Image (cartoon, rainbow, N blue to C red; front, side, top):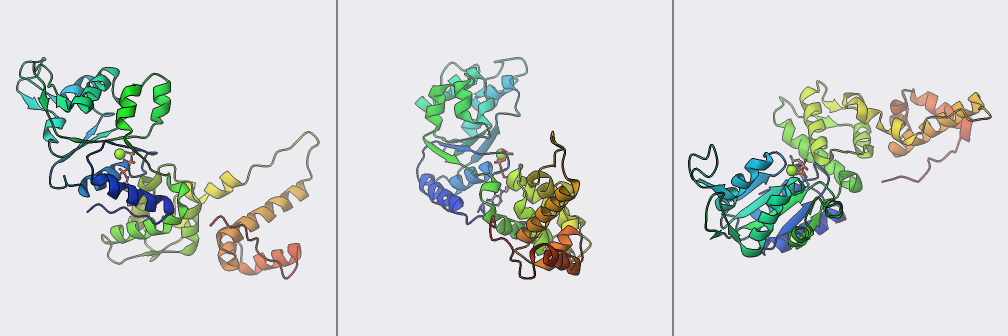
Length: 326
Ligand SMILES: Nc1ncnc2c1ncn2[C@@H]1O[C@H](COP(=O)(O)OP(=O)(O)OP(=O)(O)O)[C@@H](O)[C@H]1O
Ligand SMILES: [Mg+2]
């Protein structure tokens, strides 16, 4: 059974919706950024449905050339076009009694959109070159990482098809909007990729914090790739920040601390350096939950140096700011 990791409220809601819709044959439209698990959710819906023992056929509308997609989806008869040497069933026929997953639906041509709309309305398909349509029983799940409503507004996607597909819309959140699932996912992928190692390795708290704070534009796929690569390449028993990709290590300092600008009146360099140092220290303490040892390591300082700086700047009983983002 497909495993969907996540306990964030958004994922709990998702689990609830998927098990509910799985019991029906309603058309499902899954949207979400790249790598958020659209295909995984589609498989899950199929697996939880009464069609579980029937085929699940995935068609990627974005990678099959436009002129081939129609015969790929609906099949063709012998001699219907140059190269059609035989009758060939399409994906809809192969998915009969099961589920078809139409991935990257926004890439479908206008002509094919009309044909798909007819299939959804009449539950009939007509292979290329055939003179009669015939009935199919297929559950349709579509997916896109585009804003389909914007595609409709721009005239690139038919609104009638849009409404046919949106019977049950499911939106997958990007990973950065459910950061509390990051440790769970890391644990899951570490367990998975540790299997190929002579001995299992673990991850340090500082490395975990960096992975937590990173924005993950490629979402779960990117996270899995990073964990897989790091686990395979690691010689040490524990993954520390220096084993992580450079873009993740530098993410916070580049993203959250804006570069200082020399304004019209110039600037007081000493004050600016001081300000920068303060913010870096705050950031490091926040990221390590106030652990001075770990914060010092992130800053490349000895613990004693960090403690001395804190004393000098803020007095002996300085408290770490409590505005944690987690
Ligand atoms: N919640 C999750 N738990 C465990 N693994 C996940 C989860 N979500 C995604 N994955 C894994 O992340 C990878 C990407 O997922 P999937 O292919 O379903 O994403 P997608 O939204 O279809 O991406 P794309 O738009 O790039 O096609 C897969 O290897 C999948 O198994
Ligand atoms: Mg996909």
